[in-house]
Length: 113
Image 1: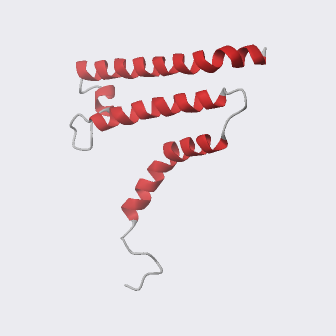
Image 2 (image 1 turned 30 degrees about the horizontal axis):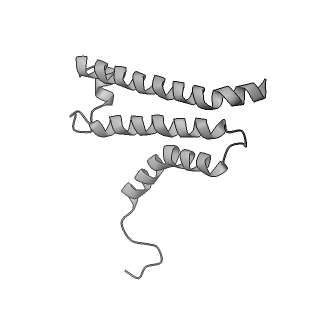
């Protein structure tokens, strides 16, 4: 059963999930366009309240990176830990890095200023 799943799902399931994620994001974009003041419309706005394509690009990047991890996980010779680590660091570590960057005053502790 596992071998059949690896033979057939390695190509079909990740591609199907990518298509579903992209269609769902396009539906979300259509709903935001229909009612910009609704919850979905507010999700796609920046801090100034203006529509932001950056948030949509981040969502699409997340969709594609999920597809890459799914494809890598279903490889017959096993998953590569480096790809998974990069995915986790990029997905969850980026917000932490932004918060650290906001708090940093531009001076290293070991500098002589």
